[in-house]
Length: 280
Image (cartoon, rainbow, N blue to C red; front, top):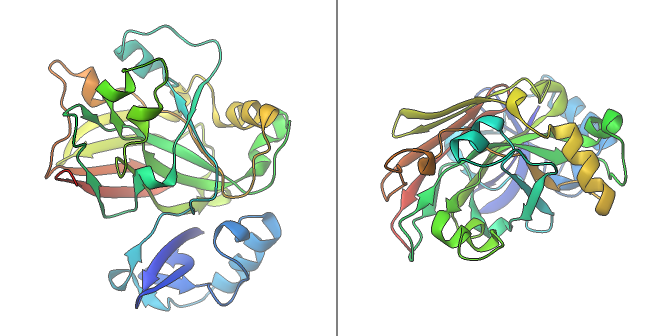
């Protein structure tokens, strides 16, 4: 099942994406999308969607972020062995974790804003785990039971701002610098998060082609690790890192610029796309 937030006729809605359209769940289930990520609510959503015809076509909606601004967003840096090698770094002994905010993302088919004070605008395709059951101090062996599904993130980075100080947050939270979506593919449909292909295309040119088997710290480890110090709640995100092929890894770097089309695809999860607009 693929769950999405969207707008139709000026109204914010959520539903399940099926062939040709969306089954609207807004009035059929209580609360919003994040409220319905817990196991019993997901089961109810599956029953409603099974055999249902779409209420609205995909060409009639505007996409929204698959999560709201209220959830926690954890990002993991330097988590693919190939990317670590590409950047000339050492293998980490523990995950490098920072936070992003929802305002730093645009939804599927949105318009990222070229940074006004930098030309070092980079792309990073990342598998993103969406929490569905509260998790606190869970073990690795049970960690994936707390994941409702997966979505795709472009952890868009403003590299020079990222390196201005000891913390990367300024370069990782430039407003509208990243992408998130298009939907949440439930864990049962997405399958093994350690066996997914991650691809980025810029203007049709393949730049990144990685595999989640290259993750230094896999999804189960990250859920367990983060839940050690804070409770993970439904709708929280863990953005797991990006494979080799980022703009900064080329000589010379292949920075994003206004007019570029960015497409990111993760097997069994979906395809996320947006373009780069001139600075706001």
